[in-house]
Amino acid sequence: MRCPFCHNADSRVIDSREADEGATTRRRRSCPKCGRRFTTVEEAVLAVVKRSGVSEPFNRSKVIAGVRRACQGRPVDEDQLKLLAQQVEDAIRATGAAEVPSHEVGLAILRPLRELDEVAYLRFASVYRSFTSLEDFEKEITELRARHLTGGTPPLPGMQDTPPAVRRRGAARAQAPVDGAPATG
Image 1 (cartoon, helix red, strand yellow):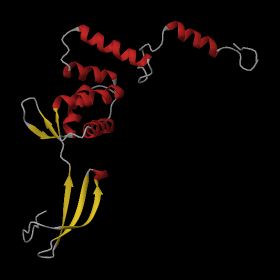
Image 2 (cartoon, helix red, strand yellow; image 1 turned 90 degrees about the vertical axis):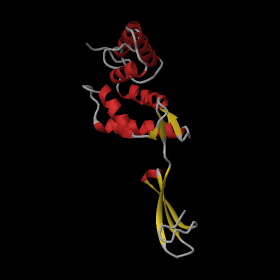
Image 3 (cartoon, one colour; image 1 turned 45 degrees about the horizontal axis):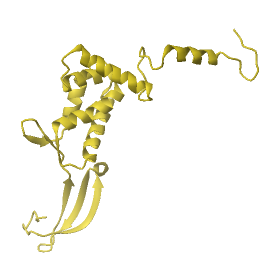
Image 4 (cartoon, one colour; image 1 turned 135 degrees about the vertical axis):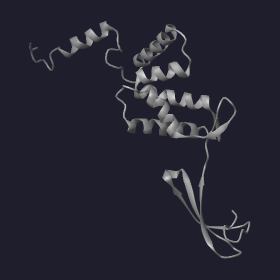
């Protein structure tokens, strides 16, 4: 690291500390030539490559803005949007790639958005995946219902998570006498 005072090409690290929950590293340095000390901050840059080939730094606020449109009129607050953006960034950084295609950012948004709000997920997916017909929506809704049957996220009110016969049997069991006590009601 070049000294900002005498422009010597070499410096010695005296101390290193993580900052911003490990996202950055602050290093205290000393120049062997002039003896002055200075601090550097290192941050791993995550770049997103757009379809046009242009590369730009990952921006959580862009994720939030895109998801906010899909969540319009839904019971989703700003804190939930910020958490979703953090989850997306963490998932992308976990790949270890310094540059990711914008397409992968969209894929990283879909999973946490589906868990947050399924209606917003359908809205986002319909634009992101370019739904062109009612069948595209029906297929996605069928997959959402299948997730509920296999133990995925809890179903939304009104969505059937178990067949009616199973629900009736479960209700009958709930009314059965417990420990030999007579049934009431």
